[in-house]
Image (cartoon, rainbow, N blue to C red; front, side):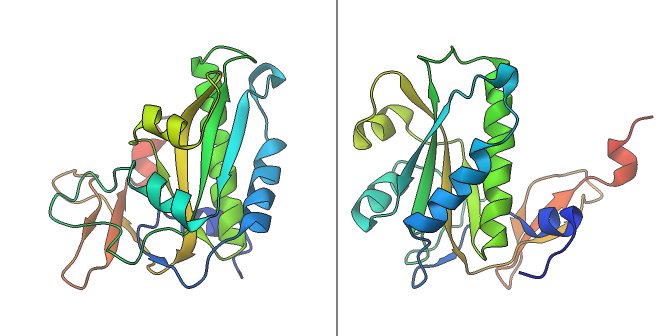
Length: 196
């Protein structure tokens, strides 16, 4: 990976929805990603997040079936058949540590983006999935009651490179795919996001 600045790393760490299944991630890399997240800042230093690493094909396939992808694209199946992610990290909140609060939800975002950047550093990519069947995921992974799944990170070798573009004239921020099947992600301009 040649990205050198934080901006370059962040710019390239797009959500990917098409993966090369011939190059799985593996447990060692997944563990490294969680190690990066483990040392992140956390509200009141409570550290309520726990992680389930999914690197076996059968469980990954079952977990994939419990997720929903690319809600804006109604007529496109993503990932395409045969291009699903090979590995997952399921982020869980340990309610024995503390109840789920706005602060602990911020921890989820901080740690998920850290994992995203760590994956990119190693040549992998991910898609953060909040739309999944939490109850069935807990059953599939045999989670105890205190571990509540809060976010699924689908990880693999990217087989696409989403493109950042400007928000269109109509103001739509919905990502889209063109007739070449390239994935575009509209982003607001710097002038729109800095208010003072």
